[in-house]
Image 1 (tube, rainbow, N blue to C red):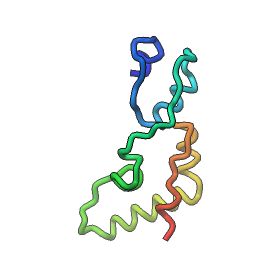
Image 2 (image 1 turned 90 degrees about the horizontal axis):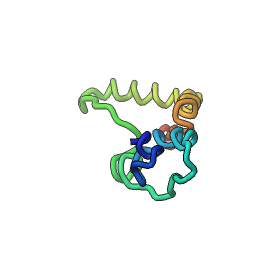
Image 3 (image 1 turned 90 degrees about the vertical axis):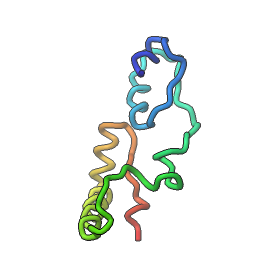
Length: 100
């Protein structure tokens, strides 16, 4: 999809911001740009909650608490911010989710 866009075979695409940001930074053509329009979906907390999910049995509250604590530690110490900026050129940290 991104190669076709850059080659002029597509006029536009819909994609996750994290995947498109690096692509647009390396785009050969100046004919395209990211828009400010956001399609509600996984990035909209009112639609699906925050972030990306993993399935955990709802009765396994101990495991959920451990996963939540580990993720919040990585967010709070800057690991998620550093890694997401390195690989996606944006900060994907959700600081609000760890505030209680």
